[in-house]
Length: 336
Image 1 (tube, rainbow, N blue to C red):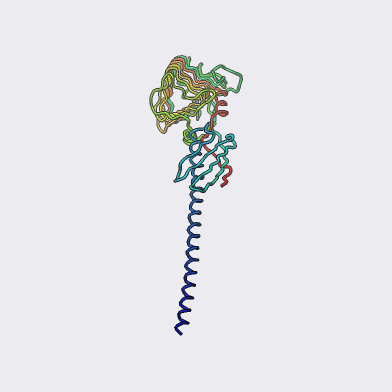
Image 2: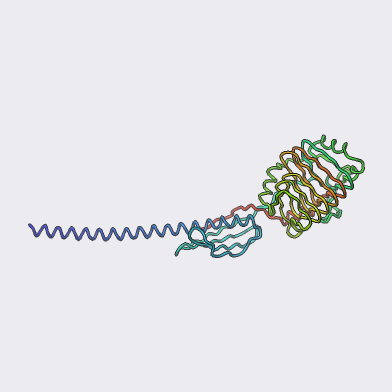
């Protein structure tokens, strides 16, 4: 009997030992699988996060292309390669976490800029308009090239307004010399009601999101450049601004506040001055806007003296359409 119990005890011990060994093996395998799963997940997160990082970089740097290697992130690293054209841009990320790699490839398209409807050389949209135009100011809705020389093209009003009452107010308050200097569709003074349902707040916010240059309130003089003909820019001025001297710019200028232009400052493109309250625009000296000028606010006070020129230019506007890039992307595919 004692021998039987001994044999049974030894048998149970052997079986128990085998079970323990197998459980330990299974435990080790389970731990390995857990660790591998974690590493794969972490590598995937690094690759996907790096794509998001570089989409944001592309929003801020519209000419960002090429390879960017050995970037640290989340305890690992990644390599980025950006190639293609704006209509089909590829962003490839290869991440590294310990001994695991992961590849994510995204194709995207840069959306175009939405421009305002340009229907006059000067557009005034307000429930309260005030004018003080003097000197040799020249407001002209005939088409001009980007340098301000008149060219054959579609005639637009010199000044476009929202209502017949606005048109009557402006015409009745113009001095005879200034009246003859507002040319364009219909002859001087070319002041016309234009159909326009633009949501100015939404449009300006979209343009501000895509801004290449942001400047604070202040004075900007000779040497200040806000875009060139070959590289026009979207410039956003966050407050009252004064451009003077021989400063210049190409593209789109958005001013959330009052605009004061003097000296020889010239902007080639679209200038939008807007605000929730009153807007005061002063144009003096030989300054000018070649493209289109848009003044929007609950109250608009437009002042001009000297030899200021406000011209319509289809070339200046087309230059924007062709060359300025948006900061918004549409994801076409996401592979990982």
